[in-house]
Length: 320
Image 1 (cartoon, helix red, strand yellow):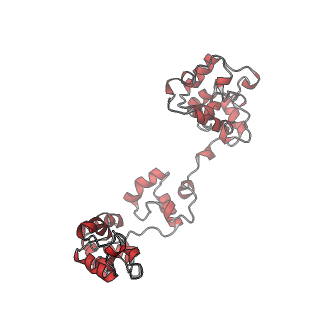
Image 2 (image 1 turned 45 degrees about the horizontal axis):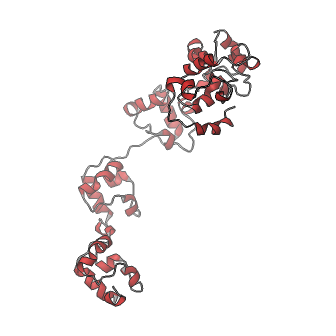
Image 3 (image 1 turned 45 degrees about the vertical axis):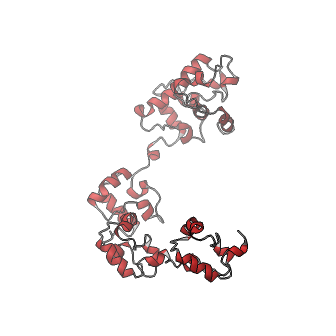
């Protein structure tokens, strides 16, 4: 269609468009050709000098104008609907009345006094300060975060449901808030004390230690390599075992049994956790043992075949 086949003036196109009662720009583009081929597909560009928006062109009402413009009117309807909280309002307000805004705190920003006022409910009052809440929690004998969530609502509703967020400016940890001790403070404070205690139980390997340490002595850390990283000299030193670093590696068959007992599910897991077995295990056993028959054979039934060997290289530089 040539240029002259479209309505030459904006006012003519506007009158023609309004005659078909298009409800929106999308409706205009869908029905334009069926209704009147002289209507341009891009009127905002074709009549750019006179364009004032789709609502002006189609004579439709902006969505915001369809909403209650008066805060008190919307407030009265919202309060009558008995919404329990802001979340319930936002989920169901349109099913109650299409003219209620979904984000009233923005739409009535100049009049907004909180959800309690808008919904006609009494907002719960929580302890204003961290120390008030802390003292209340201690008075209830709360000893952990799980205990807090279990007791808070039943025994003291002034305790906020999320104290971490509510007292964000002063929050440090649950241990500080509840006055309890971190597990770390109950562990042996230094490497030598932990090593002396560990040797009493005759652990035969790092794997054996992982399984039995807490049963033997709760003060022994699950991850001594991390706990005493500045003093760590290897599992052989920590457990009082023969120093693997000065002896040949275990045979391939023995190593396979030791590795498969850990139930590693991937190559990456073997690389990053092999020190649980011994300190000197190779990152790439396929380059050390002639008996090598693949990772599936080496790791056993727990190995997930969809793991990619290509990721192994990324770990080799960080594993030691």
